[in-house]
Length: 297
Image (cartoon, rainbow, N blue to C red; front, side, top):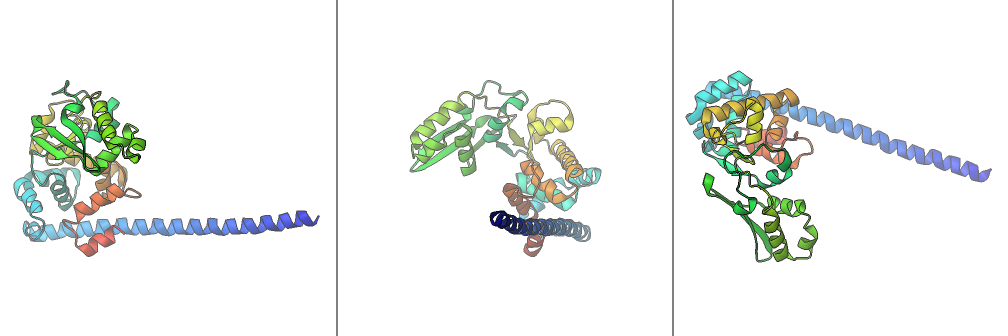
């Protein structure tokens, strides 16, 4: 009987402690949700303020900020204004996004090898260079004690180094983490280069184009039909599709902070480190440091 009472009291005690932690977790969650809501609302209010400032100052609004903002506005303001009005996009946000994505360069192009591998079976057919392999455009090598990679695509006049994130992703995709941990980098590079021979490069399909750096598969979804990817270098065509994409994202997320994050990463802002970095990079061009801190709290 004594043992039964001991177990009963112990159960009550443990249940009480568990209940306390459960209540604490509940309230902490509610507080965090409230903070997120306040930050999101603050983001929208600051954005409205920037729109009013643009109306009052005109192009002077951009002259005092990042020169890329002014280049985008001065070169494409008529199209930006038309698209923003059509889709209900804040002009200042649209201009800043374009500056971040392409720097206002209509011929901007970026190949995404990790995207190609992760979405390989779902990508539309490469329309321009169907016989090009990934090994033709991506080379992995070892420099010192580090894996490196370079992309060279003369068809689009494109050349860059792979980012550390891309290297890590390639190693993970082909399950070579153990070899990398064992410091067998030459073997890792060799295996990666061999694996890349098995995949089409898809340099027109797994790439972003033009002012809004739209991916070709996304552009097809917005138009409803396939076309020559090089058409995305046309400023009016590109901005029209970028505007439609932003508008569609807003219908889903209902706030511009999540829209920006999803535009770049495909995911909402919350618990999305890459999305947060991108949002901060975009709004830092038009928000003050204090406003950025408040809007991203």
